[in-house]
Length: 217
Image (cartoon, rainbow, N blue to C red; front, side):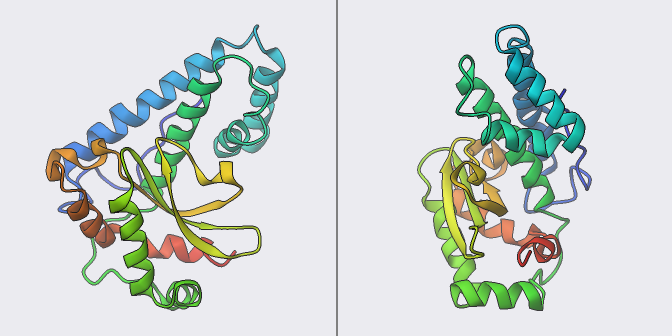
């Protein structure tokens, strides 16, 4: 049912920020495992919870993969009776990683946000620098495995949050705009326990153009 998305760049395209081997393992093994576990858990509910199973397939067929993942994490989460934890955790892992790949692009010299993004970040955080400092603090200070996020609420207010494990902001009624994986598997091969170094260099591969398409909508 759910499938591994192709990356919008080669595995070595984020060098030297994120190395080829880390990207290959992260994408083809870690991300793929979330998908395999999610699909297996869903299939196990075909006869145990046919309403969930059929509704999920309807959403998937009519609205696509991302909508189906969001449906699992929001509308369906409260009604799941069996396999709730494994489905929620792996759906979150699939969605989070699918977004994460899109948040990045090959390294560019002087990678900076455009005027629209800069103005929006300044409005909500005081300046681009202040936003980056606050986001970096959330990412480096998060205890254990998880994610750091730039999110938007229903009123259009932007904020920064961190989530544990594979929790996604949509489960809190928030729209994820930018996210950074701070699980050790995202950086350990190159940076070992130096998470702060990984977070710092990650800014060189942030796709500000993509953020420009979503930050004001």
